[in-house]
Every structure is written in C-alpha cells, then in structure tokens.
Length: 253
Image 1 (cartoon, rainbow, N blue to C red):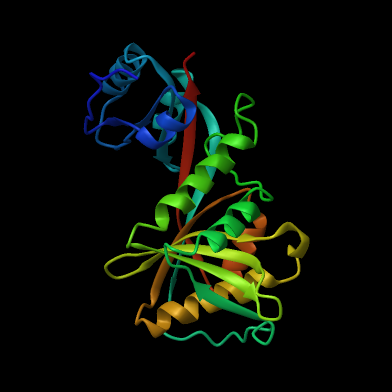
Image 2 (tube, rainbow, N blue to C red):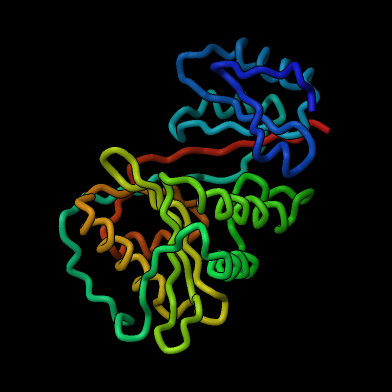
C-alpha cells in the first residue's frame, strides 16, 4: 500500500477493501458539479497511486457522466436502488411467531456470531465485486462476514439472530444501523435450507416491530436491482423506490 495516499473530497482509499484484497482500492465520490476533465484527472491520479480497483456511484439519470466513466474503462457493476418506508404501525401478522423468535446479539455471544457467519457462506450477495470474474463469489462473502464481525463492537449497529424456539438454532439474521431519525436496514440472511418459505417476511416484520417499539418510524435500505427476492420482500411491506444509482467499477492491473 502506498503510504503517501491521502483522502481527497473527490476520492478516497477504501481501507477495508484494500486490506482484504491486499491491493489499493479507491472510491470516487461522484458529484454532478464536477466537470469531465476533472474526473479524467482523478482517474489518472488514482492510477498513479498504484490503484488495483476503483468504483463510483452515479445517479441513474446522469447519463452523460455515466458515459464518461465508461469511456475511461469503467463498466457496469449493478443498479443500486434505495427503498424507503415511513409508517407508525405494522399491521402484518408474523406467521412464524409461535416457532421463531428475534434475539439481539451482544459482543460476547461468539457462538451466535459464528452461526451468522455460517449462514453468509450459504448466500450469494450481489455487490461491486461479484460481477467481476477475477473475484468470483468469495470476496463479496468475506466483505459481508467482516461487516458482521465489525458491527458487533460498533454501538451504532444492532445485530439480531432469528432463532428456532424449539432447538435454539439460528435460522436467519438481520443487521441494522440506528441513525438520528431513521434506521438503515443493512443486511438480511436466511439459511439455505429454509429459503423461499416466507421466513424473510417474519424476520423483517419482527425488525420493524422492534424499532417501532423504540419509536422509529422511518426506514431505508439499498438493494441491487437484480435481487428480486429482496425487492419483493420490501415491496410487500410498503417500501418504495426513492432513488436509483448506477455503480461502475474499473480494474487497473
């Protein structure tokens, strides 16, 4: 890693990903107010910092800027949709409440965290690396597992397990982040053997109820446009798409 790399308002070194891959990964901080010559200069500057990989998120309606980055060698990774829900009550009844229970995990519960890590190994998560043949499925899974491990000691995050009451086994999990006036619904997972049975409905219902009891009524999440199951789940609860972002990435070496 180049120790002289410094953050700039228009780009930054992504330390988490850089440490994971062992090579420099950058995020370009897109703004509509920046001209194309500046973006070209930023791309060249990142290259000179021995960049291995970079990504940028651009509003889906900014077609000219998307085309510019494509001309610089960036390619489509995903269409990221922001979904939001604003409500004060949740009338949906959880069909699994007699058999499954939501439980918040504290940092000392290493066994529960390990069970969640095991579930992540069973799930394919679309992200900025999953569409690049160089990385395959492992890098995204490692990133999400690290996210879970780091969240356990981060007081702004809440990590939950969805457990079978009968045998105390973890069948799913949810990661959420409390913000000033809303909750970021970050990550949901159901073990492979129980997927497509409606457990996600029960889990999300319990999460919304938990935070409504904490006096939250605004929620949001980011979902890849190819993740139909997640989009359908959130639509079922009344979430609406409020923003669309194109994620582009570039491999330099």
